Length: 159
Image (tube, rainbow, N blue to C red; front, side, top):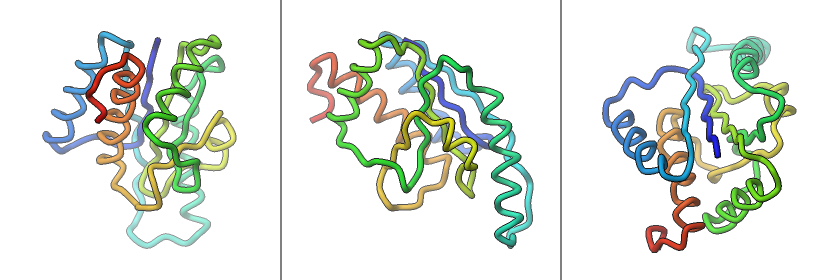
């Protein structure tokens, strides 16, 4: 299985980099993991709604350039479907059973993802109604993917 995480912006904090590297290492026995960073669009602090959409569209094009047609795509979104860890694990297991060996997760920038990215998604996934910094979301997401693999392998890790 191939797992790809496409994210907007660079990860600067060492503690996030270290945590993510640890989970990538742990997952190496289950899947090949690739993290792809695309540049965030520089914008002033205060933006009009039209300017926000423009920033999301620019970042969205960068994201879509990194996704191939055959990939099954989850996009993180507050309006996405919430799942339990067990339900998510079952979904990943079912995807691989039914021929989806390339699974991509998308984490947008601070403004979220464009309509084009959301339309490309096979599924929108939510980690709750909280807003999280996208750097923290990378760590949360990769931990949940690892947790899903551990659940599917029958490991007690997730309890």
